[in-house]
Image (cartoon, rainbow, N blue to C red):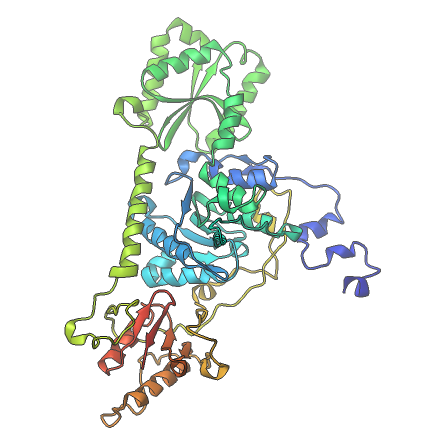
Length: 568
């Protein structure tokens, strides 16, 4: 097409629909200015994108202590992940449980949440449906929960973000060995740009949820492996660099640091903050004090003093607090100078952590443990204990249900029919990128082709994919959504529901017709010895199934197929 219609156009290769506005502008303007300062993410989170796309040139200037929760990056492996096309139900359930668990913890009281799927179009709507089933609408809106793909988060951010990798290990071969997944082609750096944006949307905490053993399942140069290796130890590279570079610049600094260490304070030497280094930083969880040691060697000239004060003023605007110790004063009266310093620490609430018998990571570990434990409780409740077992008086006759799917009682509701007939608007993916922007938003620059979803679109749920119980059913037996529920008509009603209509076959036909009119997917496999299936989440259709039981029509729920079935 380009060769046919754009043969005489300069730089015609840029008009393939994949070039960003920044690349197009680069053909007309020669110079570029790279914005290197970054303020959104805490340094640990932005370090992945910094190394992936910006050659380490980004200067993260946000103070890590400003994050409301810790740790900043969490790698969470799902042992029971199950991939179905572009959807991993195991990861989806765990992410939903973890997010709900977070909302119950006081440390996350004001946090906003996002969920980003790194593969395909099915995972994010599936997780969104789970969350809508378990989070009240007002809380959902207050938390600004958004589930989507990387382009949906362009120019946006959340305090806490969950990434779903979706991919699962290859099945074992005849010998029982599991081969690594093949390397994924990445023309135009599409996946690299998606990962860059996805990994930089979280301000305070990033969860990387996956189903892979990256050492076994992914090859050395796989981008997925790079992300998982980083998430397992996000500070490893930075620590190696810091250990090589962090050197005490003078005996004066060492003398001050030694006095603080002896007093039990958590002391960091040559602490990096963006392009700067602070002589000493005293830490107590979320509180930090910068201690600058003004010795004769580095603070004798007027230029050195002015440079130091300018640096301090810039960092104070970012929330840092400074205490300066003059070398001459320290050596005249060391006890007096240390006493003045400890008074500054006391005013800030910074305590000697060793005297208290805990480290600065204790509270973070405890919070993470609480979230994991509560998520496990929620998963167990959702999968096995969420609904009461049928009472004996309301239970099925012996042998009347699938032994692999025990009958469970849905939660009683008001009987309202929930309208889930709307489907999300599929937006084309924006594959554009800017390789020289400090903000990873610009790695997938805004485009008219890839707007973020509206709140209404983001809450709409797609109809689940239909798995087949036996051989594929002829198309005539598959019910496709036809019409949506008219506004205001929410009670489930069946025409002709009179005392005279008592035949079960007649009632089932009415049920099938009503479900189809409501846009609910129905699959009838009874002619092949199978079951009649109605697809939808357990909580979504619980009130309808309660009504049907009262009429003598009993459906059982299957977690494996996300639907209700009856032998009819």
